[in-house]
Image (tube, rainbow, N blue to C red; front, side, top):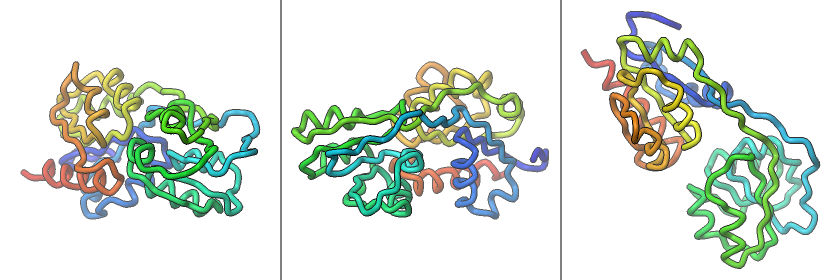
Length: 235
């Protein structure tokens, strides 16, 4: 999509499917004048083994990816982190009981007797099962998929080393850390972090600009990206 007439680029480091979904929700007019580069910094791999929900009163999903690897809900109860996760769970037959904005919010507000099972990826933040158990709500964790990291694609490196602003939305501390480590040049990078924990990845090497979304939600990330695209397109 390279076009020197475009004033800025958008670099997405999520999986291909997640990146495409995010792009589809952005202002089409802004994208018409933006180079888009998708360079995933991790891949998703299912983990072998049957899911054991015997004795569980409900499950917890902290990501939509976990829903994809989980069995059909068949009306069983689920507690979710994030609206996208809740939508995926409902579409797969789970009966969503509660939706929290973050893992911390879920741990603080969840009201259930247990026992619960947190169905997650191998790498997850929030220690949901451990913290709920400490609160007196028995919860265990089952890993459904792995997220091995990948190097930054050469095409992405070339965009970052160019002479145009590059908008880089980052959605997790682990991916932010990998991006900060892999990127050879951050002088054109305008980073939008979904949370302060994500922004911490850049303490050692500062990008051209670093902002944090107003709230840790997909909606605020879209708004933040669109704002940056408008700003970087000004003469």
